[in-house]
Length: 446
Image 1: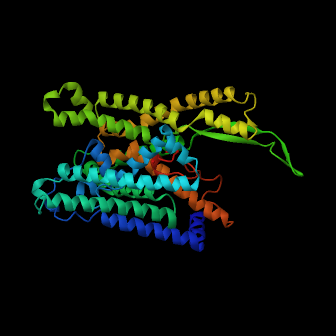
Image 2: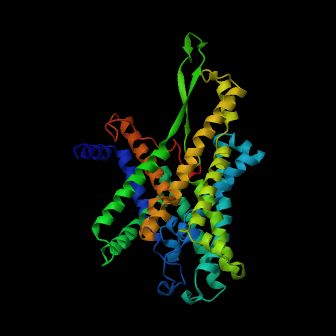
Image 3: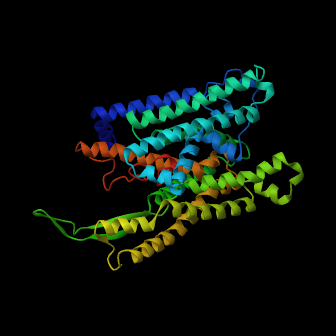
């Protein structure tokens, strides 16, 4: 307790760090207020109540509940994340974007500008779709087409404002702004989830406080397990040849290439969830196509759903890791800088060695990721309320763990830079990466 008080005092003493934390809290407060401001022309009492399921439930969690509330921030930062993923994939497949990535700061600014324009286009499309499908005619107090035009404009402006808030948090606050906004939305759902579970357990046939205590204990171990996956790395030793530059000898030191066990972050889960949403859509829009198999794939607690979901996650983990980590480029860069892996020939052999190591660590990482993804369904089968079960795994838990670690790492860096003790007595906090972004977009990985 004394260590905690001392650490908090040290944080408050550093003016720059104190101002950044206060700025972050202020921006997040503005975001949370906007999540409760309903769109003009919408009657809140006439909106359909109930928890969203599937991909819509994921969007609602990322948006902090504003999606189901028809708030001005209903789309949240998801259009920006979608645009960022598209631009990142273009940087891998399109030569023009590859060239732009190699232009340094100027290239990064161009890609950021393209991402913003693409965000605007995606937001316009999603806003129109949201108004048409998610807001019931009975909840509208303004007739069409004026309601659609007004709501589309407000939703687009809301998403762009949230994107601006995220950039301001990154610039004047602590941590990555977009990631923190998503985390704030997820945490905002936690009190209602705990309350719902408390009411369930305290009911006459709920089991009482003992099962609730065991649930929290299980959640604690799940979080520890997730941290191990997020932090897990395989270090490859690299030896650099000695060079004489002027009167000084440089090189001759051994360093390490840290290859992450979970290099793909949450992206495989996001891709897999998007695909698993297809059977549900087919069942809703084409009732004639309904079958027992499609129905089972639409139920996230069924065996068929979870087995298919896990297989897709493992497949997407290998795919995303393959496009994010380039062993050939790593081998060439190492050779140019006079580095080599002890016992491995530079060039092609190094490329094969790194590729083999990545394949060996990706498989267990993919299996662990699949286990985490299906844990909410397993928790639901044990009688845990759906609202609380979401925090036992999946995208939400990975985002929370990753963002908290990144933010704590930045706070600790400020403390160490000013010769204070870190946040821990032994060791140092490691984030997902030195420039981690949303769950994984620049990742590490949102």
